[in-house]
Every structure is written in C-alpha cells, then in structure tokens.
Length: 412
Picture 1: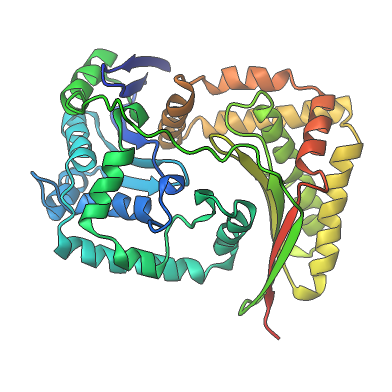
Picture 2: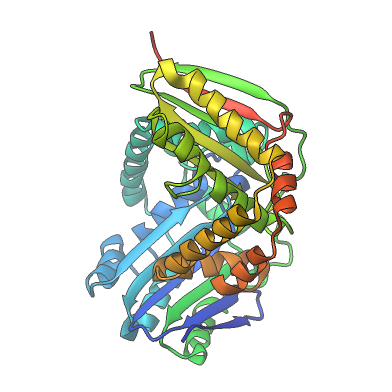
C-alpha cells in the first residue's frame, strides 16, 4: 500500500498524506521560508527561528515540548535550507493527534522567551564554530556566496556571530508574520491512518490562520548573467579543497531530470561515477570527490568538489575538466545510457525504503508542484531521456562561460 492523498484548507494550507501499513507516523509542517527570505540585516534569522520555536509557546515550556515527544519514544526534529524550514516528528501512530497539535503549537504560537533564546544563541554560535572547523562543509557556503553574490542566496544559513547575537523576539515574530503564511505551508503525514483523520486534525490546528491577502511574494533571483571567476583562500587546512561549478536548471524545469541523470553519471554517490574512477580508483589522488546538482525554486547550480594534497591540486583540476569536456563532446553509447538508467533506478528504489526521506520529499514536492509523484512515475520520465539530451544538458551546465572555481589552500 502506497496511496497518496491531497487536500487544501480554505486558507491555503496544503495537506498531503501517504497511507502505508506502518504503525509509525511521520508528521510535520514544511514552510516555504528560508535564508533567501531574509533581509540584509537578518542573516541566519530563519535558522534562529527554527531553533527557538522549541523554547516555549503560550501553552508549553521548552522541557514540555521535548518530553511530550521524546518521552513516548518518538523523535522530533527540524532543519532550515535556503528556501524552506521544516518541523517534523516520528511517533507511534496512536500519538498522531497529540504530535500534530504540538508541532502546530510551536509553529503558530512560539513566545521566544529571552532566558531560553539567549541560551540557544550560544548553541548556534557553537554550531557556527563547528562549521568553520569543517572546510569540506564551509566551502559550499563560500561557493554559494561567490555564485549568488548580491542576492539573499549568498547568505549563510547559520548567519554570523554578529547577526545571531543581534536577533530580538520582535524580529523573529516579524519574520514569521511576513513569511509563515498559510499559502506557504504544507502539512505532511505518512502512516496507516485514513486521510479523513489527517484532514480533521489538520483543520483543527491550521484553519485558525487567516488567509493572508497581502502576503509578500518571494523576490526572484531569476536568470542572471554568469561570469567566470576564481577565488583562492589560504587557510589552515591539511589538504586543499576545491569546488568548480556554475548555474543550472531550477526546480520544475523540463530538463531537471536530465540534470539529475547527468550528475549521477559524473560524480553521484556511486563508486563507479566517472570522477571517482578517474581521481580515486585509477590514480589514488583523493579520498573524496563528488558532484552535485542543486535545483532551487527559480535558479540552481551544479558543482564538483574534491580534497587533495596541494601538490596534486592542478592535476585533479585538469582531470575534472577532462571529464566535463568528455560529457560535452562524446555522447553516451546505447549501452552506457542503459547502464546509467538501470543504476539510477536501483538507487531510487533503495531510497524509497527510507520512510523519513519519503515523507520529507513528498512535502517538498507538494510545496512547489502541488503533487507528489511516486519514484516509479519519476523514473518513467527518466527512461525517456536520450543521449543527445544529456549532451545538450552537459554543454549548458559545463559551458566555459558558466564556470566558477573556489579553493582553500594550506597556508605556507
């Protein structure tokens, strides 16, 4: 059983429910509000709110919020991206109502008590410092800052020490009033419960939010002229870290799935990707090399990341460029294309066994497209991709005029 049901409340809140046979319920709210919705002096505010809504509501204390889920063996979590903030829990299905009402309470009625939020600021500052100590993670922020300079997408999700310490309760409430609109909310659920039960509880929790006629539309990044560029920072690192990348198709683009297939061939998570075979298996130059395609609501980017000894940096870069050029000039053979599609089909089937990932993916699809196709429906579209589509996609992504490079190099 894997039926998906949809509904929408009069105020615009969308509901999506996947009915399964499981006695575990995954329940949550995804809000279309993230880093890109922050103003110039709000860097990290969306992430700060994600942390601090757990610190108390009009009805519940911080300890009560944690104990009500964790105390029954459930798990509650949240995360912030450049475009969304998500609050969700995994819980025994007989606690579905209780859990959904708790999540609704923290999303709709947080109080941001100073005593608790001041402690949480220190937690976030520790998170920032931990991030700064991880060049393999920090370099993605630096690259996005370079790629999307002059737009909110350039700002780090965690913010800065200065910005986090400056946040006030008034700022948090103002941001939520501006961005946590019902038209940007998806209530998602996955369990053995009937859809009618889910809708009934969602109505009780979320129908109280008025439809916001004057809701501010998200400013679009849109098509931007991409220029080549390179930036090198000398840093106290053991290895050199490098990212090469550029702009790519946004979410919902007709060639988005072509981009995903191309990325999987180049440097997806498999050991037989072209980059892994070239840099690691054949030559032993790197421990980690990967490529990513990250579509956003109105833009996107591709990237290749690797870490290596400084003496091997130029050779690794040349090998990456060689693989990019090969994808732009040499169409896959029929056999290679068949194998690439067979591989991604297996990956999708295995990923579909991860129930938590299923629920979160379903919510994001609902937020942007108003529906959530199954992995099999998505794969049917991938099956139709031809080798010339992949070649055209490669030439758009990897064009020499659409390429930037960022690197950390060990201090001398």
